Image (cartoon, rainbow, N blue to C red):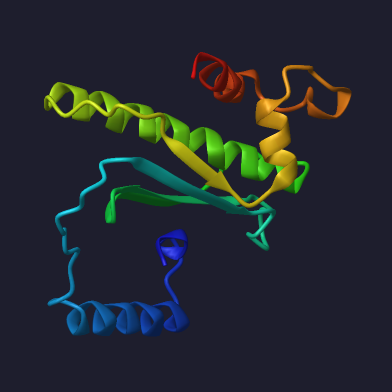
Length: 157
């Protein structure tokens, strides 16, 4: 809806009304946090390659759990065009790793340091291989260098 605010039309108004009806019906919903015996930080990442039909940009989404409780989540359209599904997934993994680094630092400042490394799950085998492989291949040179901090964090443990 926000993409079409500069040129509002009737279909967008009806979509906005539908969103408002949904919000009104879900006012009592919320996140419930439960006691959990584990304090492991686990993250899941996914991306749809070229999912936007007009710009062909990918959308990255992730969720981060501490124990059984959802701690953080995001779904954002990527700023750059991905030339492969592995690149789109790799950008998503980079986003979730940046988020988990921030959460680990926050928990450390709250005197709740985590003793184990964060597990990050990704459903794209090529992206997992790319993040673990220290050799720079020709087919991966187009990926932005700032995303390669994933490798540095894997090496650091």
